[in-house]
Image (cartoon, rainbow, N blue to C red; front, side):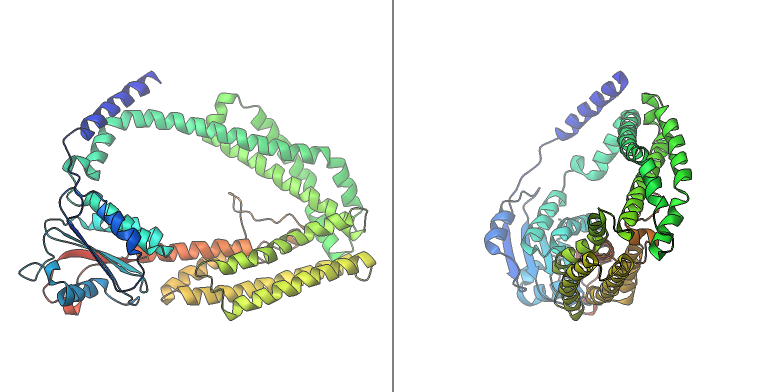
Length: 483
């Protein structure tokens, strides 16, 4: 630790030296011009914010928006607009952008953002991407004014940036000075985090293992009275046949992990073993609850109503989460498939009450009630698949994007998995049917959000340079990309 402190002290001194390497100018924009042809910016917020941004050198800022299409070349459109309405933005020879100029352009309809600079203000292509990326998260959320401000603010940091503040210089200096400290500190931090994670996993495993151990005799009694002739009872009993063997495995894992000295919990191989113990105990804890519920429900024991409520819980949660799913951006909440989901929700909420009433009266058997629940969840899965097609069709611009989104949806349909790739819903239906059988609202959301995010990132990574057929020999510094 003493060595780490000394090296970190040297790093801090170097940092102070870099920060004090020389004075940096803080210059407000010489002029700010806003041509908001798309009508998406709030000038009352935008103008004061941009006028208050500090640049390293006197800079004229121009903001241009228009509503184009996904197929448009924003670079070409910005040049066309400049030639037609702001020729002062172009150099005297007509080949470059004017000196001292920074243009931030936005196409909210076609979802493009662009940055263009005079020759004396131009930055590297990577820095142009950096400026555009600074705005994209806000732009994706339709925060047009805030996104524009964020992009211009990042531009002010990078345009004419003093050498000692450049990312490359800072990274080189800090990397060279901090190499030894970083190695030592990283090792210490990794050990500390691993030890903390091991203790957390150990506590999780102990809680589940304790529950299973205390209920072991009750679990055996419950299993012995489950009717094997029931198709649901028979499937749960199949799981129970390995219960004791798995419990013995968990017991052996418990013995091993509790034998570790405290310092050894900081080793990653030991963390892996502790996690294996915690996962094994947690799965057993869930399974003994399912065995108890199966016995209570199929034999109409005194706690059958509570057991039935636990079987309904995943379905009720799906129905309750539909409106939030349909209300998020890009979710096509006004589509026919969305209407079908809302109609199904209302119908199912009434059906749940009817099934419960009939089950209480003895009008239907527990197996029939579970069959109806299975059928309803299967129907919801189909409706969600149909709506996934609608969402993909609405968001994807081409087959490549549609394939990417479809892949994420299909992956989500397989169900949530733990770190070892297993998926399990602690219910009778979750025990009887494979994880991919039901498509739930949480897994739809997971696939939807990942798919939209991956497609958006792919769009954002496609930078366009050049000014199209209308640009002629114009070669001003600038580019655009999607968001």
